[in-house]
Amino acid sequence: QVHLVESGGGLVQAGGSLTLSCAASGRTFSSYAMGWFRQAPGKEREVVAAISGTTITPYYRDSVKGRFTISRDNAKNTVYLQMNNLKPEDTAVYYCAAAKSPLVLYTVKSAYDNWGQGTQVTVSS
Image 1 (tube, rainbow, N blue to C red):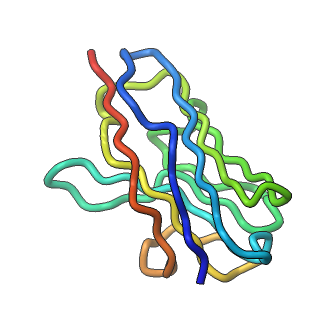
Image 2: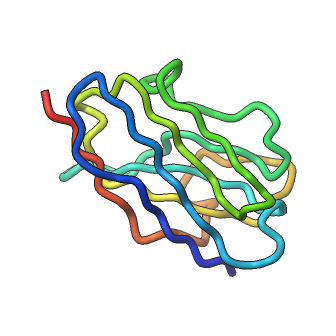
């Protein structure tokens, strides 16, 4: 098990940027695949980006490609989501998640068994 704490959410105007951070507990962070998900009111939780423990070829959902970047610093037990050119439709609660998997990344929420508490991102038009 790993404990996850997100930070960095807030209110931003359309076209602005935010960087979310997710700090993880434990000594084996590099053996976990990490994912960022989001959930807007009345909608299903959806994957935004995912990265394996070895950081090879991250995954992005189509609507954020070219605008969002997922990265991780295994020495700091932290995964980041840099969000640029934000749009009102990016408004949601953002969650980070961890799955025990050093080599493979996952894009489905059922693969993850460790979740943070979420951080609100609101993009005004």
